[in-house]
Image (cartoon, rainbow, N blue to C red; front, side, top):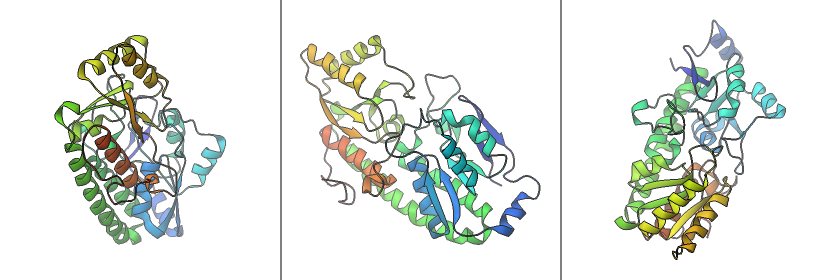
Length: 325
């Protein structure tokens, strides 16, 4: 049986051994009606759930494309919305750190799942800011994020055994698309010349991308946007950029670019010109209703933008020719 994992506090996960206590599983199954009402915390999590559940459920995403999940605090309306849901899915690994107590309380009355639950800790990157914590930005490695799909399949199948075959079929189709995306990302990022394989971003959200696809990643801020880059950090990064002759750095859609601009200005003061290579999606996808507002489109945009800005080759319109011009 799949374990249910909820955030216990900002730095730890509380693991509940069983999914349903007593006879609650039987009671839920006996009154189950479609569509299943599901809440997901982030767009990336919601995209998995929507693809797997298909027409058997509706997925409401708490955080839109302009919200930073590191800083998000649920409102009363958000909590009420989750209390009405049949199921709740979240990222875990402390990404939604401000929601810890809320998720613990909700898990007493309904199924609450971290989609990162089944991923082996041996492949997780450490959070250098907090001892014993892990980097939560798993979705930057497509092959690793594919493992999160299995949590959703198992959770939905346990909640609704009658729909298990549908969820498995939907998941397999989605996993095929993700495998194709992973191959595309690998191909275009491999085209970046060795001397230019440095990805400087507003905050340290791209570690899994770097580890999976062979690029050195440096964030101006730490893993959480709650941390601030100090003057010493900025000066050190400026020296690195000048030494390596890095010509492009990248902004992020949900992170203020003040520190990044300070880095650009600092490099300029030393006679080295640095440009903004583009704006990347880090902790949120693009606007709803757009290609970039899907997980496939988000990663397509990032990989295509990075490759082209750092001297690699990638189609202007990306993986499936659907990127915004």
